[in-house]
Length: 265
Picture 1 (cartoon, helix red, strand yellow):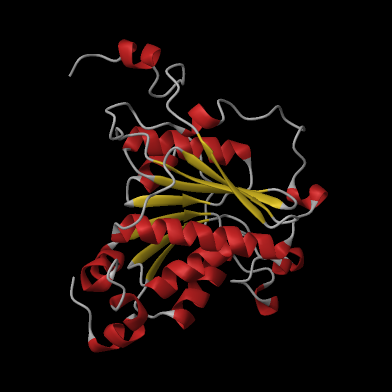
Picture 2 (cartoon, helix red, strand yellow; picture 1 turned 135 degrees about the vertical axis):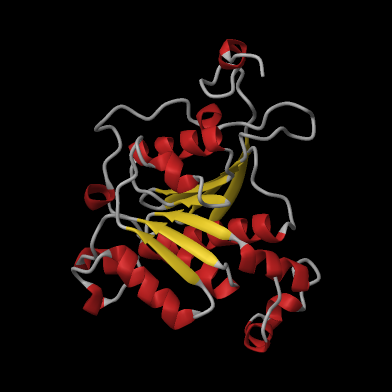
């Protein structure tokens, strides 16, 4: 996919990187990325994907902008209060990079619409703020065969990993699913929501930016993705650690029992 003169100047700092260059930038331009959530994680994620030249960004969020969002959801501004987040985010992308197309989906992901939405995109980046959506997205990505970059925020900590559970690793074993890492959601009420627990605003910027980096690396095809690795960030100690995890043969998506129950092709 060719770049026009304006794009060549806009992405000049990418084009001189040997790991990206013209071919990588063309891949970014051709990519269709679905972002789940235009909140704390989604705000910086969307901005950096747009700045990088991702051709089409889909945004799923049924919420509106509130004043309490603005401490961390930096893609929105005070005049956007009361506006749909997908509309506010699309307007911000338009101001940042007119070469990027935004597809807004002002809906809540459900078991009825998730597969149809996710299948329209090349890769999913999930910044949702609840466990029901997180597990729905990860399970659906497995079933429709889409890679997933997923992150989560705590009060002063964050996590990030990439799931390519529909593929096998270099050792021939299946890549781990999200449920290999976290088999099931915590019981309701055991993890307080952001409104009760609080969250450090700048941490959302760090984790959302790391999500964007992981997406860009996957699309432009350079570096080592966080498949089978959970990046953990502690903002109080400014400590980054990596936990390695693998495929669990007992997981309900691609485990041995599930694979034995599937009909032969």
